[in-house]
Amino acid sequence: MSGVLIIAPLALAATPTVAGTGAANLLTADPNEAWIAPSLAPVTIDIDMGAVVAVDSFCLAYTNADVAASWWIEQGTGLGAGLSTIVPAAPMRAADSEGPRHHCFASLDAPVEARYFRITVSQSGAAPLYVGALVIGLQFEKHRERGGGRTPVDTGSRQDLASGGFGTDDGVVKAQFAFSFIDLTDEETRRLWSIKRGRGLRKPIVVIENADLAAGFNEAFHYGVFERFQPYEDVEADNVRWACSVVEWA
Image (cartoon, rainbow, N blue to C red; front, side):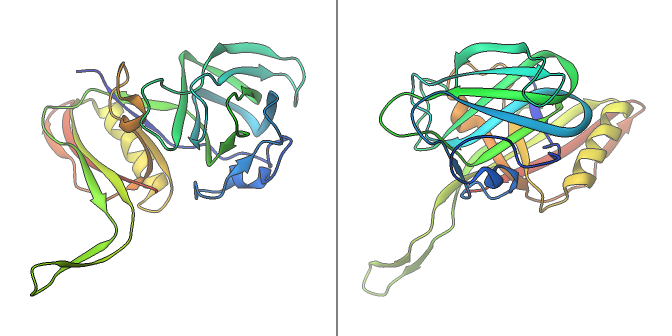
């Protein structure tokens, strides 16, 4: 089975330089606070990380990207200057995404080191693009053992009535994903510890169920928080098992 990806968002040094409404919302954790493009025309998002960082993952999550929307990514020597392509033009979202919000993800074969990045988006369809979360980071990948998986979480409530019916209060249905890493090396264990300690149970994290998933990608992409922490199991030297779970932010 291909590896699970965990991506801890790196901090951006400043609000991205982009036309439209709500650019500062690209800095917030809440995906319901969105940036909205000014039109259907291509838009550039210029990003300053504040210092040179190593990255290999780019996410625009909670979007209304049309099935024909495209994007490409460049690194620069300055803000919007000295640009070179690191992700060529490609569809933004999976064609089989169930929606209504679509997650866009690009992964590099190897990390690049830069301070400045530009993401260019080209929306199609009837509505200007909106983006609820921007994530740039360095991925942790490791295969998981069989078992675990995804389950729906209903935030609403239901009361069984004596009449045989139900009393209900509305909520949303989102996903929880539980899994266990096996055969973690000491180095991988230290890195995973660093990620969990850095994010806690409150700061956002991206978890992708399968790095090589060809179908159902959008539903296997989880932007949320670690649901709970469990101790790792030191099976033997350089062999650690560690259970994890994440719950989505709806």
